[in-house]
Length: 285
Ligand SMILES: NC(=O)c1ccc[n+]([C@@H]2O[C@H](COP(=O)([O-])OP(=O)(O)OC[C@H]3O[C@@H](n4cnc5c(N)ncnc54)[C@H](OP(=O)(O)O)[C@@H]3O)[C@@H](O)[C@H]2O)c1
Image 1 (cartoon, protein in one colour):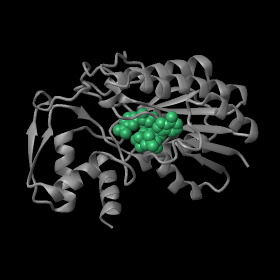
Image 2: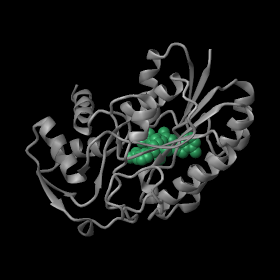
Image 3: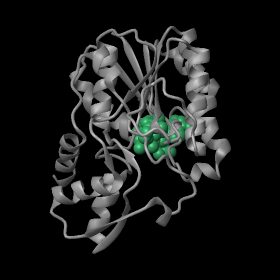
Image 4: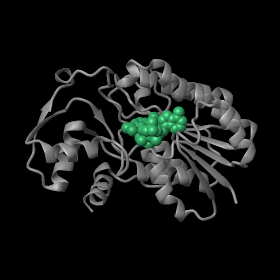
């Protein structure tokens, strides 16, 4: 039975892969947390691969604290770049397919059209730089790596925008949300399905693909949609980015063009509103 290693097991995406895994009984899944398998520990990775014959490695481990990364550059690069390069190398040596997740923050936000894989990159924050370096090292060390860039990820697990909004709606009568950053939310459960389809269809595709749910929104409109789904009375004020300074800059436009995924996997991508409803229904229950 082919073995799939999923790192960063307590994160949003890995948790969704775990929920989905019973639908794929033909694979044996091994989920490892940060404590069980810290990806920056090269010796631990090597011995794990020696002891377990891994056929696929889905790297869900990442340093995802975008603002904190500005003051923890070394740590962000260690986990998002150096460790990724090492993991890619180990997968290559063990003939395991390496599937790695990257981000819309590799783009600088100046192109206001859905972003294709070949559009120029140019991160404007440390997190984006570290993730871009991770992409580069992975492809250098293992040319058959599949990299999936995704954006604005949320799920019923972990910390994310949807859960923050639901908490704020309970705690506050009025909140301010940015209305001039454009992107596409991604339900981690949908991304988990895409990853499993890449594996299950025996797709040997390597290189970079972009994936998010379909449609475009701003954080403000995203918040309004969440509010609608839970009938909240909280007032949401749209504000510009300039009114909410953060340590890390964010691209003003990072909508991903996912047409390559649609073509490769012959699937229809759910709209962000459709998927958001599914997630909020789970959170309400
Ligand atoms: N979240 C987003 O909006 C977003 C957007 C674009 C791309 N992405 C990318 O999508 C992927 C999945 O993101 P996610 O939202 O599922 O992230 P997440 O919820 O933050 O999960 C990442 C997991 O990695 C773990 N981790 C951190 N350092 C590690 C280490 N040294 N060794 C092993 N595990 C470690 C974390 O553990 P701790 O929590 O205990 O540190 C956490 O469980 C990441 O590559 C991320 O960069 C995310």
